[in-house]
Image (cartoon, rainbow, N blue to C red):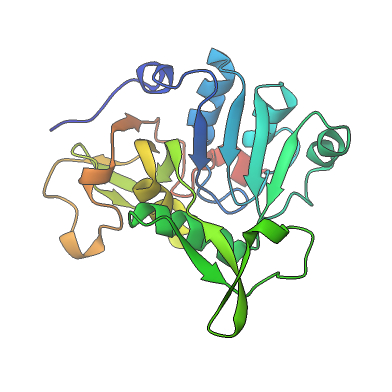
Amino acid sequence: MNKQQTIEQAIAQIPDGASIMVGGFGSPGTPFALIDELLKQGQKHLTLIKNDANEMGIGISKLIENGQVDKLVSTHIGLNRRVIELMNEGVLEVEFHPQGIFAEKIRTAGAGSFGFLSDIGLESEITKPEDLLDWKGARYKVEMALGADFALIHAAQADTFGNLVYQGSAINFSPLMAMAANQVIVETAHCRAPGELEPACIHTPSAFVSSLVVLPALTNDYGIMEHHVRH
């Protein structure tokens, strides 16, 4: 099945109030074109789930700065002064998780489970008393699975069926998010015919992909526009 759509069609599926996972580790792997279209269309009251907040004026920070985001679930926001200000002002709700826990919560959702036990951060401010339990003589925190309505993903290569290949550190959370979201929208600058991607090299099978947007070739394999790289 050919899953190609225009970027306008793909992003128009997202309603106000949606929860959206966004791939990327800093800039590599961030689906900048999909984010820009979401900014253009203006959906509001969004919950974003991303490892970081990008830097000011880049990636999901543009959505947050534009007032489209009510809540951010992340591991750190230290590179974005404006997001920190919005959090401190009470304009943006931010939920923090240690990076490994963040990844495992997403993986658990993708595996169809509901949660897991962890002994990380038991005495920290991110742990609430009601999340703790005693089991076999030890204390644990109950970590619930983390899913979403949508995931926005950048792939280095794809085929028209939606099989995906990621490049380098851009792989980060993308395979996990593609499994944990109800609908997965992917951008790529390199789209192949079915059968042209080596099966052993495919990181995300087409079964997890809902929509595929093919970008102009000036976007590189990490999701970054080439003129950003050169400068």
